[in-house]
Image 1 (tube, helix red, strand yellow):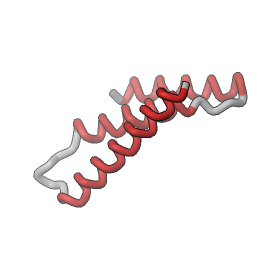
Image 2 (cartoon, helix red, strand yellow):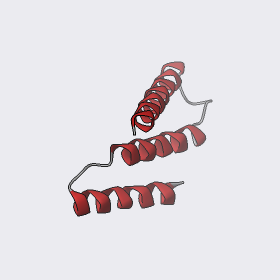
Image 3 (cartoon, one colour):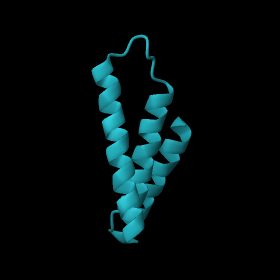
Image 4 (spheres, helix red, strand yellow):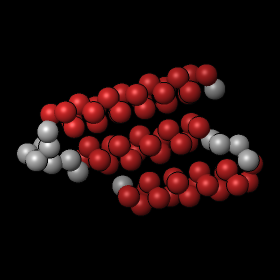
Length: 73
């Protein structure tokens, strides 16, 4: 997953430098992949409930943002 996230970030940088337009849809997809990786490696025995709820809120917010951006395009 870390390699995929690095590749996505590289693509983001290349697109930004090539067109001077920030690809928001790709950025939100990369952020979703990063938060998904965080959820996969999360150790629930050592994690507080507040942290889990915060991760869930971030995931939900990024999902809704990506959905709205995709729906508009």
